[in-house]
Image 1 (cartoon, protein in one colour):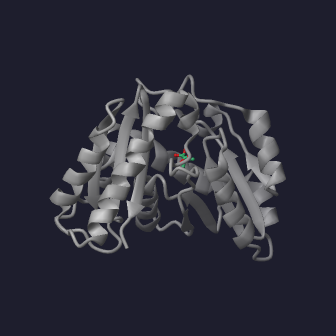
Image 2 (cartoon, helix red, strand yellow):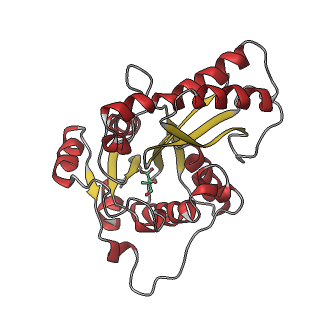
Length: 271
Ligand code: PAF
């Protein structure tokens, strides 16, 4: 893969990477299209990374429609797909991890201990193999974007990080590979996440700046839907993910909740 990428990027051609864990959906396609528009060579990876799943999480049942995914990548004009095995990415005896301290314990990192360590580790490995000039991630996982940006800065990695906008269904539900786990009733209940964000945004636009007031309103909106349970709703700084006392332009409002046993996330950036 490294040799192939080096030869494709020869002569200063701009090589982009879209890392994925497969089960591609419209959100991924938007990353691929952004890469296609910006790069001379587009690579993608499919790797269901075991180290970013907790012991109680859905690693075993995570969808792996490999043939369909590869066809979609081909149709989007991807030049090269990297789909390594677990043994290739984690050679026997592997004991080295990348930990972005502080950030990895915030937002999703608090309820998913070790998750961002797994993400940072695998993304740094992918960067070392593919050596992209630019890599594309979805803004839906805003905490992941912050962790990866911090890792790239701290490890002096020569990779530009592009965050692409969240893709939503027509009713506002953010696209997620995990939406396939939802029944039609749960699909309806899942809209509580987006509604709670809209409520926060609306209040902010009406002049409310106290994070406690904004969060209380969002939580109240969320709790109107009894079928879902809240993990967190926070107003944070988008780079350090630290809670803000007062909301301001650029602040990230992030929500996570469970619909049955399915954990979903969403966010908006206040403007
Ligand atoms: O966002 C994802 O799909 C994954 O966390 C990533 C970045 C591909 C790392 O496994």
